[in-house]
Image (cartoon, rainbow, N blue to C red; front, side, top):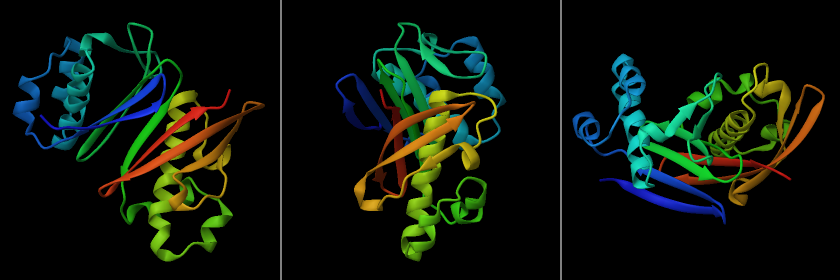
Length: 209
């Protein structure tokens, strides 16, 4: 078993991290899947995606749930049958879930050069121009994760990472930031938190009340 870490985010929100060290067969034999999930994992071409999917179910079982407790709405947003909120993310070696009484969004990303090539699709923050080259990958990874996390909370068609979600300037050592979503004549504020875990960046967001 490769349960990695639990983060107590708030009094009613916990984040659970699984480091994927097992092979597919081990994970598959140790989770219970409902028919729709079995169809999903069978249709995945990537071994990494399959293991990430199964590791999420391992985390559910670690928390006392099973795949049967997890459901998705018409736009693909997950929730739990007991009414608690859940957010899910996985990337290569890690799968992560957050379980909460309130809306939360999480994202984990491998830090790599690719984020520099796609930065124009999600970032026009001017403060990036002032960064040292050594910090740009780390900062852009946080930006991407912040916007992905906010999108997971709102989950509305038409939201643009570039045009509708803005992150205030921050320093990478701060481990927190502020963000605003302007969409459909609504303005919503979010707290952003992030941690670097090995070569990955975990970002989580919640909406300010």
